[in-house]
Length: 146
Image (tube, rainbow, N blue to C red; front, top):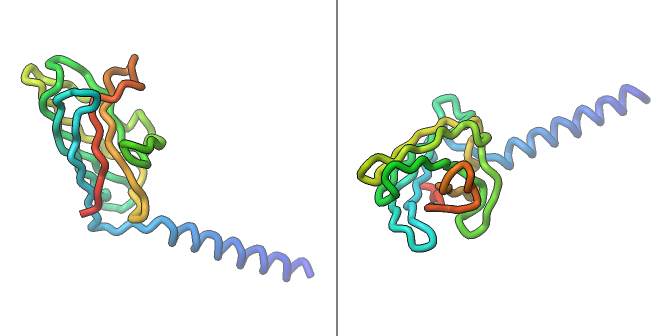
């Protein structure tokens, strides 16, 4: 009897693992893009893109903006959800180096996060005002599959 219980448990665990794997579909050629726009009257514009890492276990993100405050330093992250429905940061906040804004109001940043974007998920890029003002969003863009 114990062997039958063990086999049943093993079969259930295998099915659960396969179901979980199937629920997070990641295709190696899926690229995501976003048009980034300023919030609350800010004139910030820009683009963001995300694609799977070569091994498919993470995501490479590139962000570029224009029209921001010269000399600012902006924390930024990819989140699950959308600009109108906030969600958690993907890959951990420490994966994203703050973006430095140059004297002409332009900034760019890259990050490689230890999270793959699922084909069935929704994601967005948030640019925050400062590390001391993370609740203030300077700009946001919903990532769309290409």
